[in-house]
Image: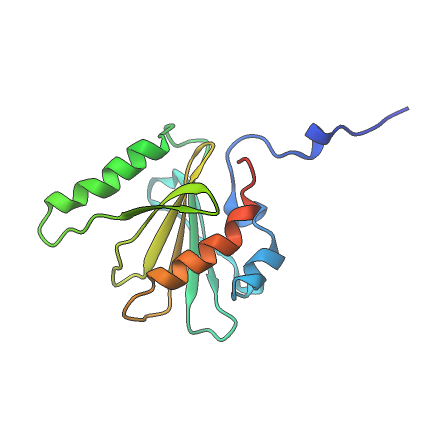
Length: 153
């Protein structure tokens, strides 16, 4: 006799947003999962993918540390993001919650706006670009839509 336990279907290891965020969630956030492309990252220490919007007017990027990255906590990522305040023109991110999950947002850049969500193994960065004056409200809406896909990861 064989069977499955609940833990057998629970992913283990590092969170991979390119594989673990469902296409239906991506579609629900206004993006086309058929356009998903895995992107090589500098140093290869993270998993990254880029997805276009249904109308092609915007893009969604996910990035999360992978198993070869040194383990960093949410607090260390946040401290690094806050340190830019000391640079010329630097702006601090806004600390918030997304569906009850710790997060920080922004600031807006020429590359869009990122919402960075705490995960069990680091930070999932969700960057949205619509080339608007302020992509941050859109990024927060998208992050709130996709956040349930993370689960306890």
